[in-house]
Image (cartoon, rainbow, N blue to C red; front, side, top):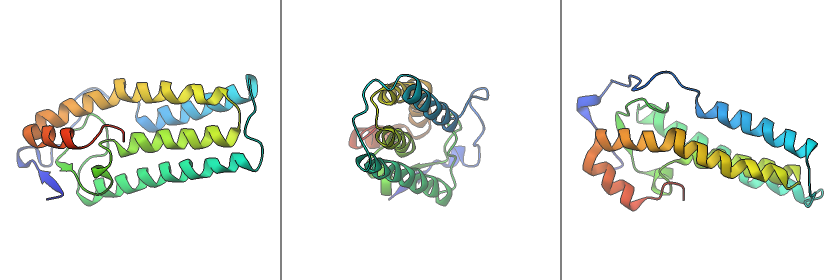
Length: 164
């Protein structure tokens, strides 16, 4: 089975905690910081044109990961928003590769933008972004999933990596 419906929580979708800044905002701010670093402190320019266009590959992969995951959330009628109780544990498709396809997609988008810019300083933002996603979102989401889906979640968690 691709997913499990947790009927006792079906339709809940209520926020577990207060309203928070959502991950796309973190992505947008990260992109702005990367652009600022590139223009203010470019340090080393190492990817000249046309090689910097290779950034389109991770960018496109990241965008695709987000669209595929978003489509899966809609198809299985569960929430995409962090800290809302999921009504379905999706374990198929892109979720067989990573437990967090949207966060992975965001990181790939940042990598693509860094390659496109062609200087060293934008890369500093990527690990900071990944750690922020882990601390601010992923850990809390996984706790909620464990509480909601218990053994099924633990089994899935053991089989599929957090990132890749």
